[in-house]
Figure: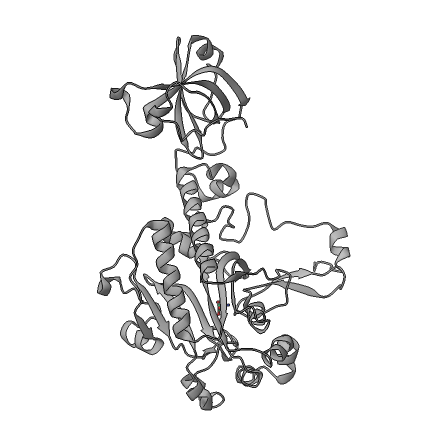
Length: 452
Ligand code: ASP
């Protein structure tokens, strides 16, 4: 190891120890005779004292140069201590090794840079304490989720990224196949069908922290690839989902933020929220007086009329179970059909949604017909699911937008602030410069030629 300690862990109890620290020069003050510098890493900063010889040798040191410092920990006089922890000590250097002299940074960490510069030099931008903190919160969040899900008996199971187009109501990212020119994989908009197939496979309680891909126009809270906490359970109804998820939310908020969240969450049907708030994701903080106000919105309509498509489409997705007593309206009075879909709303934004699924192939076929899919098309697109549903247990689940959860927990306004390497609003990665052209040879291999 190039260090015995991090830059964030020494304190007055370490006085007298010989230590080696490695990190970045955070600030440097070298006068004619002596020098002080702060050395920084992920964990914090420690002050280094340079004697006359070292101060002289390193008088050209700059911020962000990378150093290794060997020296002795000295307690600072109490009147000099401004902060507990590393503020109580300094390391009196005996040896300083310049691990790397760096050119000036492309962005100044102490001033606000343009979004473009931040994205282009994200690897430097990530050094900002607020970026680091956001990623720490995100890490804690995913760790807490995994712990809770494991304790509840869920299995984390990976599902393919190279998949077949499935509809979540968005455009697919497609991947050409070399082995089958003219054929394409689609990156999944969600693992929806796979997780239902896992239930048919008897896996019973599935979850996955998983990337989803949707080719949509972007806004501050959208990314072409984003992360979901995706889950599915067998032999359950809505009540089981609500209580399992309330337990999750309560556990995670306690673990990550030490916040006590009251459960159960209030519930309203879609019709009630629309009547009272004219919104299906009302912010009810004023009524509850709480900092974090959760609300289940239930019984969403099964269908909505799409002007673009000029037909009814599934409001959640077509694998959602219609309400049994509304089945009679499926073909003639679609506006009347309620579904077994639910959303979890936090402070006026939808943070998760799901449904009890159709677990009967005949009902699934009827719903496909209701959204205008011919039997032939349904078979072509969803033949595998239709067949599998013949063997399916009752099941349901939901997915949470994990980036948004992390954003809310980290107190940020954009999900880009809780993603290490996000795309910009044009879906470009300015840092790696993607998307980019590929060679004619690569196109040939997959049997494609570009339109002029
Ligand atoms: N697959 C759905 C979505 O991505 C969530 C669900 O129904 O579980 O919105």
